[in-house]
Picture 1 (cartoon, rainbow, N blue to C red):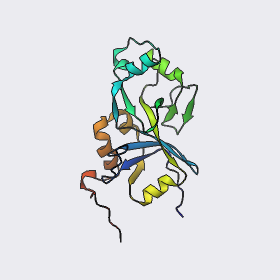
Picture 2 (picture 1 turned 120 degrees about the vertical axis):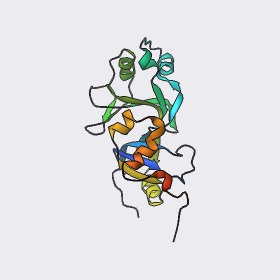
Picture 3 (picture 1 turned 90 degrees about the vertical axis):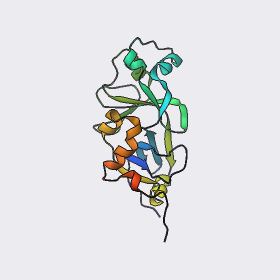
Picture 4 (picture 1 turned 45 degrees about the vertical axis):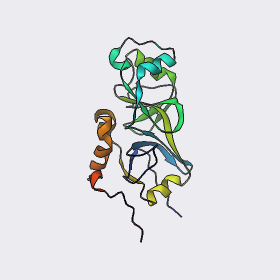
Length: 187
């Protein structure tokens, strides 16, 4: 039996041998983990759409070019039509989950309206869809060396270019991901 640990507020860094196209070379921020499973948002897969497309689909108007051109990320394969905002806990929103002192996850329309008007969180990452694991599934994947884990940090989520986040997350625990073998050994 695999011991259950709490990986909330951790990064899952995909090992080089993870071939699943949903998670190849990804960094996933774990927003919630308990005995029932885990939920996270991939933070390094920008979609080919910007926030202005989300605004249009929600009938929200914004004249802020910087906000309109904000990247939207592919948060995972589950419910890709649903929006998620990882942000700092600087304001309260209708449907907001406090993860810790550094991060919240919000799924309500009020945060999107506020962003369109320039009144959203100071730092945020917008994603469509999420990544989910059933009870014990994440623990099993960790035992099978599919993921590395490290505490999440705001700099990687909010300031590091998306294409550098996989390497940066591994480097935060002293690992050069390029030096890890893609071969898995079993004794």
